Length: 91
Image 1 (tube, helix red, strand yellow):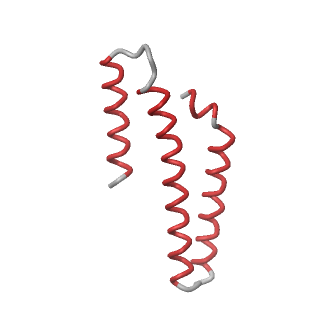
Image 2 (cartoon, rainbow, N blue to C red; image 1 turned 135 degrees about the vertical axis):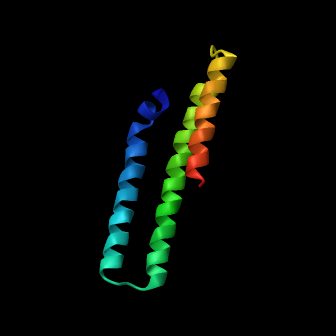
C-alpha cells in the first residue's frame, strides 16, 4: 500500500495517540473515575480511530480505485474488499 508508506509518520503518530488514549482509559477505570470522564475518554478514542480509518480509507480510494491503468475487474475486486472492511467496521 503505497499511500500508507507515504503517510507513515502521520499514521504512526495517530496510532500512538490512540494508544495513549487507551492507556488513559485503562487508568481511569482502574482509579474508578466518574462515568462522565470514562465516557469522554471512550468518545475520544472512537473519534481518533474514526479519523485514522478515514485517512487510510481516503488514501486507499484515491490510490487504488482512482488510479489509472486498473482494469474494471481489478477495480471491482478492490471495491469489494473495501466494502467488506467497511461492513465489518460499521457493525
